Image 1 (cartoon, rainbow, N blue to C red):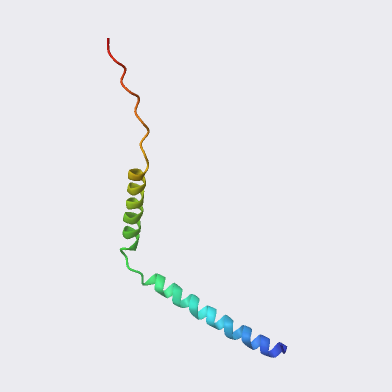
Image 2 (cartoon, helix red, strand yellow):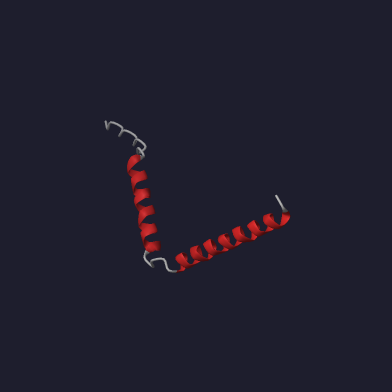
Length: 66
C-alpha cells in the first residue's frame, strides 16, 4: 500500500475513534443519576440469591439429656 494512502486511512480511523470516544464520554456524563442505586440493589439481590442457593452447614445434633 502506498504510504500516503496508508497515512490518510490512519488519520481517518483515528478521527473516527476520537469521535466514538467523545460520544462515549458524553453518554456517560448524561447517564441517569439513579444508576448507582440500581446497581447496588442489583448486587444486593445477587447476594441474597446466592445466600438462598447455598446450603447451610448442618447444625450439630443436640445431645440427648440424661
